[in-house]
Image 1: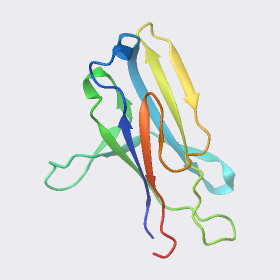
Image 2 (image 1 turned 90 degrees about the vertical axis):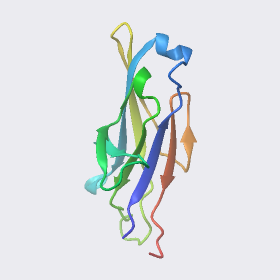
Image 3 (image 1 turned 90 degrees about the horizontal axis):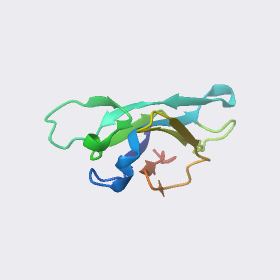
Image 4 (image 1 turned 120 degrees about the vertical axis):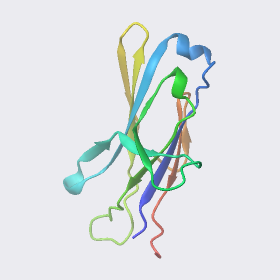
Length: 131
C-alpha cells in the first residue's frame, strides 16, 4: 500500500522581517488513529537531494537559520471505516515561540489538498486506491 506523503516548506525566508518577532516555529501533523483520535507526529524525513543513500530524520522545527528545510511526513494509509477509500483527515498545529519567549499555538482544520499560510506550505499526496 502506498503511504500518504505530506511535504512541508517554510514560507519565511531567512531575511523576512517576521523573524524579528519569531524565535522558532515547530510543527506537528496529525493523522487519524484507530478509534477516531488524532495522533500527532513532529518528526519527518529531511528532503535533501544531495544525500547519496539513506534518509535523515529531523524535528519539524524552523528558525531563521533553517528556513530552507523541506520535510516529508509519511504515514501508513488509514482506510475509512467499512470502506476501501483512504482517510484524508490530516491536520496540523504549529507552535510559534516569540522572541519574548511566549508560545502561540494554532491548530488547523482538515487539510484539503495543498494548503499554505504565512508560515508554511503543505503539499499532500494521498494514497491512490487503485494501487
